[in-house]
Amino acid sequence: MKLKRLLAILLMISISVTAGAQKFEDLAQTPPMGWNSWNTFETDIDEQLVRNIADKFVELGLKDAGYEYIVLDDGWMSRERDSNGNLVADPKKFPNGMKALVDYVHSQGLKFGLYNCAGGNTCAGYPGSRGHQYQDARLYASWGVDFLKYDWCDTGNLNARESYVTMRDALYEAGKPVLFSICEWGTYQPWEWAGDVGHMWRITGDIINCWDCEVGHGSWASFGIWKVIELRNKEKIRQAAGPGHWNDYDMMEVGNGMTDAEDRSHFAMWNILNSPLMMGNDLREVSKETLKTLTNKEVIAVNKDPLAIPAFRFNNENNVEIWAKPLKNEKWAITFVNRNDTPVDIDFDWRRHQLSDDLSQRSLQVENTTYQLRDLFKHEEVGDTSKNLQTSIGVHDVLMLKLTPKS
Ligand code: GLA
Image (cartoon, rainbow, N blue to C red):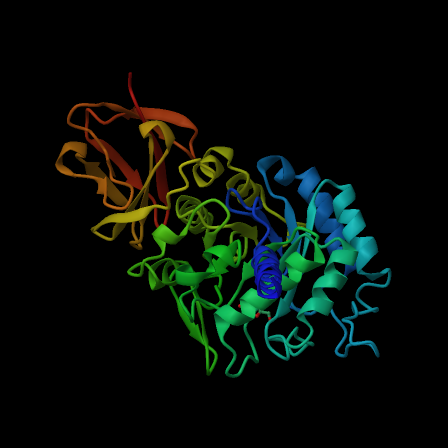
């Protein structure tokens, strides 16, 4: 009898431990959209900036387009924890404290995110969460934080999966739903283990605002748009993406100094790859063209398509990248990106290209179906697949099409 009771108790304990070990399930059903401070402001952030950004979300139609999270990256805290070991929002940068700021962002119908790190220190040298995970999670919950980006600096010999599981469990235990954004740069193949740990995971080191460069910083490098796209393309990352768990190609550099054409291509690729869409530019001074790109609802609809299958590289002919993504109802999205430094003429015979996807077992049936073509940047119909696609694409620009079977 005693043994039975003991077994029952052990069973209950193991059930409750397993039940505790999970992430918040119904978040990020489509790739998260928002803004993050790092790409433009690094640690030079403060309360007024966040308030302005929140106002701009509403004023510029970004909220309407689906952008939701405002995330403060590294540099929001004081250099030291307080005497109870709690993190402190830097009182100079955030004179009214973090809770008041979170409340303001919420009052605009938006969500609020913060950054910390699995190591002893963050990448910019502020106090990390190592040894304080549960305490920090409770603090974020008391402020009403909705999103945590969790970095990987100063982690020594820590095991990545275990560290992220610990923080996931701490957030879950604190009880306030938090979207958990894993940032270990793809070092330990998070696409293999992070599906039930976080809602998105970075797949590369830091992005930088250039088309195809790589900039070394001693022990690490930052990557231009095409370096980010290509770095993990040969690994099995596509199958890891889906509702609630996404490959994160990093915060966007749209509006940060590349040409408008390059920004369009960058945006098209992040959408067709099902990446989270975190803006990284200064929304207080945004050009018309940048805004047009960032709020292109037809392109964003591709990112949010319910099938949730990321694009694959179909072809690179004459340095024109062709990426294809199956969409719901036998539709497709296709990008043609001109990586040449001169404009390029396209003469694409649909019937001579067998476009099929092993992963989703779908193929474009141009032999027996004609597809209507819609240009998602020009917002107009541009013919169908019964004829060759004949057009030209400017330097580093993109043609993004949606293909719909004609009935
Ligand atoms: C790392 C991350 C960046 C940013 C900085 C902050 O480099 O990858 O995205 O969060 O740290 O210090």
